[in-house]
Image (cartoon, rainbow, N blue to C red; front, top):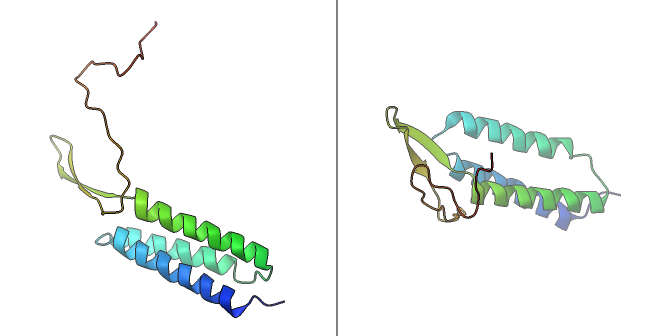
Amino acid sequence: MAPSTALRMEVLSIFRKLHRTRQKIFSGDALALVEARKTINSEFQSRRSQTDEEEINKSIQMAIEAEVVLRKTIVQAKLVDDNNEVFKVKIHPETLRNDNAKLKVGEVPGNIRDNS
């Protein structure tokens, strides 16, 4: 049995959303844009003949999760100073940020000790 129209619309919606996210996250990086487009299109094309609604829903959920990972965890970094290994990082408002503890050179975090 063919999937319902509502399910088809949901697939199209997440397909478009993945491409919008790809364009935003990889803007200015032609190679990443092309490769991400190929991957998205390939994944959707490989599932095009699915008719089992349960499998289609699983694929939709996987696509939703992939979009969240793209949107929240991928950042672009560009080397701006070879000598000091300085990078300019493009972070979006939705990018997850974890606090990084600042350590002095040679300092050991927490109770981690070299027991050798």
